[in-house]
Image (cartoon, rainbow, N blue to C red; front, side):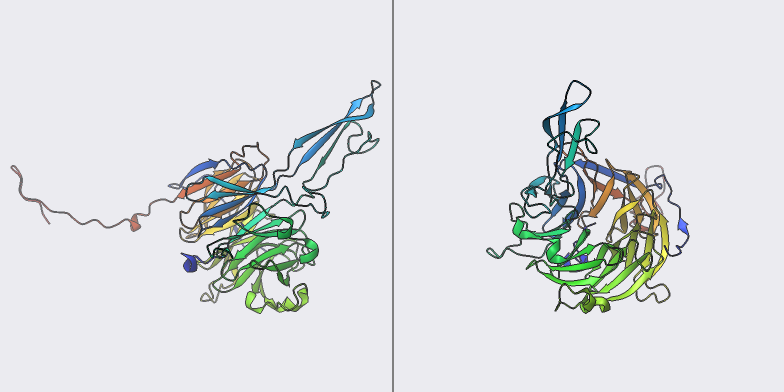
Length: 464
């Protein structure tokens, strides 16, 4: 999940604990409605929700792919004459939808951006000009190539809801995307037609490698981006107003991020970290910004580590109950961490581990309705967890490999994206889900006893 980091109140492998097995069937009384949205997305990746301005942003990471067919020579071989076909066009973009109507609003195209070489628009690729004798296309006569690894296409997306347009003074949210394959970051206003090369902060500028999901703090106008490396991983801090790199925080093996803007704390999950499976606690008030690319000045900002989680951890924060839900993708589990400092015996410890239906790739929490949602990649399931009891209660089938999930705090609608390549219509790459929990009799309104009524023709008056 690409979280906005907005407080709802403010703005409207270490030894694991025993795993509670997920019931493969839905629990009694739970139900859901699912709507498939037409988005034009071909390769769905991450989502970002702007609850203030009522917008949803979804990334399409699809690059271009090509095929070159060398013509037969009549003797069982191939000539150097060929036909080139575009198998899949580059459709890299961010799609904007209306949260209230779920209608498509606009595309922000990334196809005009220069690729990882800094020169080739749309990303570079190489196809042989003569029939290859070895390797790609040697035996079949068909050579293939793709820009998937070189195009500046968006994978992660988040939104700073609190920015304004410099000319009009009106709200103009800032979109932040991470182009994972090129490790670049794009920062631009929602009023823009599309991002430009001037909006892109390259890996050479930020120092990022294998950039991951962005998390945005709309209160302080910061974006946090994880740069994965097992031994030299970092979190890079960007200013969403100026697009400048402000600081670098050392977090070896950093993977997913979650933020608590009330306490100005960042939680960083890890994968293959030197210290084992853990969540790092970062006190953002301790971050030094005087030397933005020097990570050594910010070792003191990592104030604690929480062990006992699984491998490949991606956290989601529950501000209502002060808990962290950690999707452990490789361990196929979800860890629940107590973050309430009033609970001295369990503070910053894993209090429960829930088995997942597949590999939980992303997790988000709806604190108002006490629900957590996990996008389970392998099982093509959106798992629902009741955060009142921390139990798995429902599995909702997705149209493809569920990759990311985010929730609209106003309506409680969860949006789940699938990464399976679809058709150009994009139907089913994004689903809107509304979950209903069982009615608790204890929460029903108490009715009065009513008017006992007067005596009838054949009976006595009713009793009080």
